[in-house]
Image (cartoon, rainbow, N blue to C red):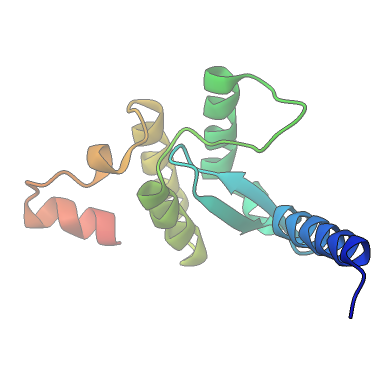
Length: 128
């Protein structure tokens, strides 16, 4: 039978390992959180995107520069999924600028980008 003290040490070691693994992103990625606390692991290549630069600037203005703790972007998880899919598709620069302008002029929540009553033309722009 295993000594109870040794079992406790092993459990603590596994907890620390699991916690450390959860907080660390894979090589070539960084971690951000949405305003509703959903975790996103983003490739470093996305830092070249003007959209992420604008989101980081908005985060700095809203939350300040944090030396400890996670990076929290001022948008919800639905909008973050939308931005990530937008970047993955390799959007055109003019569409990227239009999205940035809409980010800057709104509160960056999914309800401001996907209202319940939209006509087909607006849906086509969002789906592009």
